[in-house]
Image (cartoon, rainbow, N blue to C red; front, side, top):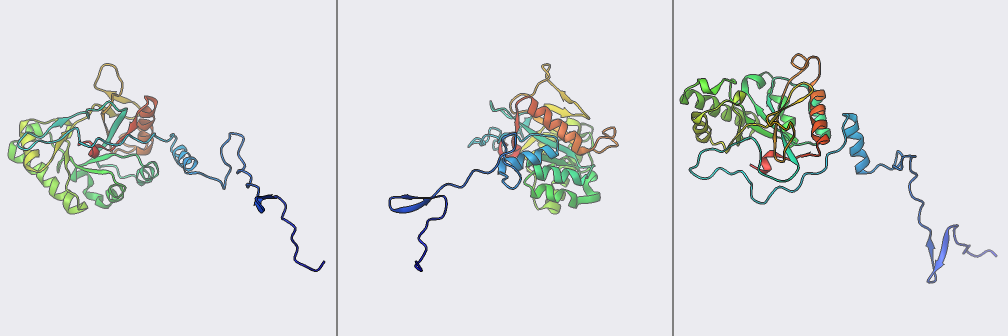
Length: 272
């Protein structure tokens, strides 16, 4: 009568002399069992982002080994690799040249956060150096693919050195990073290439085991399958070279083929 109201709010129970509120109900779920809009989780957001590109999320790659499996030994020739020695079901993505500069590809790779390495040729990128800056800022690797994309086997040692060292200088000037990895155009190299790469400060010559074409993967091995540690080649290409397909469509197809074989993608620079 006239005093404070000591009634407990609905849902409270006494426990040890104090009121205890019942737990709030769990967020409502959709018929599929996933939280409804307004109750997103990081996993559902990631899945939605991947669905936008017609993909499902990749499993996180294993932690890289404490000691890199590919190392240039002091005084030894630059190693030449097509795959990384590992038993893990991982592959490594590389994109060559830099001729196509599709803004959607930048958005795609920002969304997916799939690591890759760019082997860039100055003749292909000089029309739009800034295009590649956000891709580098995302943490993707910057690597050397010569100044003008020649067949290095047709050049003498001095000309090879100019092509390789010249691109080292250009990339350092433009992006503030000195590349550690080199890929010879067409995969063609000789011992003069190897010597020039070493003189220009590179740690490895990187070839490949598979290459992505328009809709299909081209394999070097007879079993037509990915193997642990394989390096996969793709290119910065657009509809004129992909029979009307975009670079993002080609990339999504490549990523689906990797997923279908049970692999995930790791960062090449963590292993070399």
